[in-house]
Length: 330
Image (cartoon, rainbow, N blue to C red; front, side, top):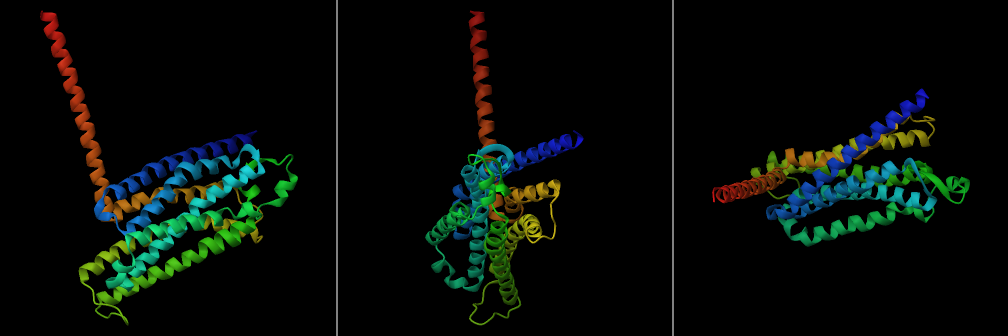
């Protein structure tokens, strides 16, 4: 009984934390999307890619996290329904990875071909890249529905009805070889390489030793690019730090290094991976000046409207009191 009550308490705490993260994801990333949408000065290719990442993070909060709580053994569903829900959870993570990869490539092109960048990387091209990120992510995320699912769970289930759990329908081989090694680790290594090149190129220019084929650029331009690249590299690094623990746990279990991961450790890994989607809006606010200014502009508008509404309400109440006073005197 004591073990059950402890487990129930742990599940309650996990659910509460997930709810808080989900709300933070939704509010924070909605603010990012609104800031990017309403501010013309930051409607540029880079920020279009950031908007795609923010949309993926927003959907993590309003769709993926609630579904992740559902696929934690809380409900009974058909096998295929549980498999579909699990694939949706995977989808938004993959969109985030592809968006981060596109952002890192954009930053690389920005410093590698600065004079040709605006001609090659247009707003229209950025829309196509965003569309490609989402279109490519869908079939890759739903690969388990094409046959790469846990066949043992399906064969053991009566009438194809199971207690829906992510790990019960998604095989560990998919999570390790396909999801981690192919769709996460390789893109992360490519991103790390691109950002390393970005900082090396900028460092070379700042020292006055441009590499072969590179153009001489103003110090002010380079410092701005270095600052923005550093902020976006931080977003990439936080993504890696938040997701690697969960992937490492999966690898340890799959390759037999450990027989079982303690539930509390697994929950911490899941929470950390979801928290990444709530962290990004905070990073933008503190590290990217253009987005910070857009945040403040939206905040001032909201405060101004609240003040106007309050003033209007006060004026109406004063008018009503005045009219009632006149009637009583009559």
